Length: 205
Image 1 (cartoon, rainbow, N blue to C red):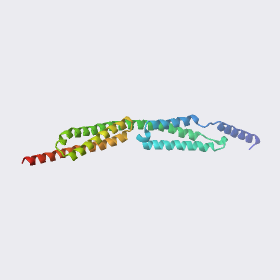
Image 2 (cartoon, rainbow, N blue to C red; image 1 turned 30 degrees about the vertical axis):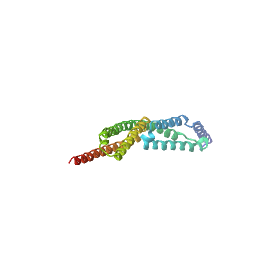
Image 3 (cartoon, rainbow, N blue to C red; image 1 turned 180 degrees about the vertical axis):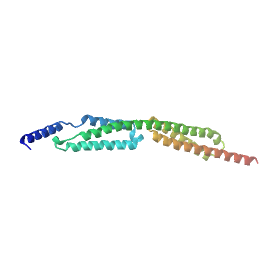
Image 4 (cartoon, one colour; image 1 turned 120 degrees about the vertical axis):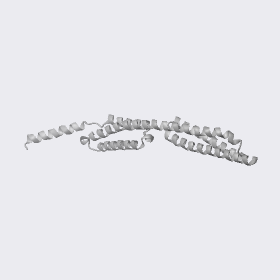
């Protein structure tokens, strides 16, 4: 290799190194990725797309780790191409996670509201039956029935509050439990009426 060739090669290498040295940390991409993660969180992804959100956070963490790794490299040799690609992936995936969370949240809301109505109907049905039942039952039984219905009514109010606050999964779960308790109380009231009728029938014999 001639001296001229060596000089040319060295010059080319120097130019490439200087071009690479001009590369700047992907501040804009980093900001966009952080925004994508934040928007997914605001959409409720921590609850309504939990696994996807965990993966999104992991991808973002890997990108930030790679960025930090490049920052430890001598400035001439820093490469941000991989970081750019990783951050772009976070932005794209974050949008999908946010959309999925919003959809799942709306579905959960509809389910919670429907279950709230079922629970309310179960409580109202039991309360309607309560009046005729109380006249035919003993005082101790009356107090138990009243306490149960009071607790159910308070539970319905709590479920409504959860829905208002956007905690749809918890609301649906509580409403389902209330519905089951309401049905159980209704059954107990029916049983109490039958027993009272039985005692009345025997008294007339």
